[in-house]
Image (tube, rainbow, N blue to C red):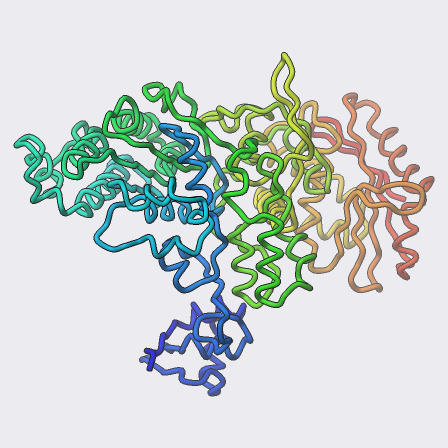
Length: 616
């Protein structure tokens, strides 16, 4: 009889898409069979959670149906117990290409860690016969050339995903712990007869955490040399999320220290290391050679723009279709496409694998899963340095538009906010944008058209950008704006907008209409509990800038049209022109068709930090 697996109320709430409080209520009412109270908490059989929700999962009683695993980065556990999307031909391509060091840059949660664990499981020489995990996979069908390399190498595997601390000393301690744990994993070295006294002393000092920073930079080189001596075989080196401590250094102010350490550490292990068979690194950014790889001139970088290896990170359309068929959810393909498709690596259409797995795991509930795996610090950093040009582009993207960008694929963290090209290059690399067409190479640079990939990413922009705008509004100003709109008082609205622009925004000089449009959209978003907020939509004979349609039809509707000019002396004229446009283009048609009888119209003209409003 199999042992019952229990999960917490918090874990059950995640699976079921309910609040923890609601799950506790189900336990109290006996709705989750086998739930056991422990003090003030509950332990719930995982099987009961799946049974109540109708979710396909482990021990769910669906004979022959494998669970859709979420967050499992162990290749062996995945292929033994869960539905696995076969990516083993990555092994074939790496063997065929014979590249000494490969760096894959992909967005977070796109399967990089699982891919590296697959490589480790395939190549690593172990006491267990690990070929059993590949004999039913695509790589095994490729023939003896590849089969004979299975289990043939000692492997060094490191991940820096948890090196996230606010100072360099703590980060270095975390990095040293990762390195020490990998030394300890190769316990055969501590009794090896092939190591000399110097190497044995290094092992002892590593074991007792007695190595200084300089000595640790030699760790990758030293470990690979020791493993080659002991196993009489060259070494495979796998490093996951190499740039996590670098990003942390940028955010927390110790970038120079972490770059210096990582440059020396990786150069020692990956450049001119005669013990190296090959190395694979993963991360989000290709940190430029001038900053990290100046001592490492041999890595080949494979980015989201490259066609080769494009289908090994993320799920392809065929893979998602097969997955939906396996779980009997073919009718959900349109919803999956709308929410989680839209990425393009090379010329391959890609779905976000983390979100797709969560979708099936959660009984096909469409919601933003990927956005909840990070605090989106970089988006906030971009917003903190917002310029009119960038703001206009961001708000265009939010409204379904595209932006033209000159790409800089060597972007480094300290220069992420240096300009429009750098910002949008980073957003592309990190998964917040997708290419619309092909890259255009010219003598002046690399150009591309970009847009938001899908509904999930649109939610990031809406929540992060609009909440940032609202967060920069003083509470009194916000309430004053709402009161002015509620009272239909154009003069009061004008006064409060002037105060807001003077006190809350650093610079408006030369701002385009799109910037003011986005500002007003952000302010209006604070009233979404009482109004349907619509922007840049067709109505009558044109496209209005912004409408607030009341959810209670006893309240008036609001239409706003914006103009941005440079000459403050003509503000009133521009505001009158905006109001006339509302009337001439019949922008009130849509609301009147919905039964809204009272509609207030505002022609609003901006110049720098000044504003003029004409009400109609």
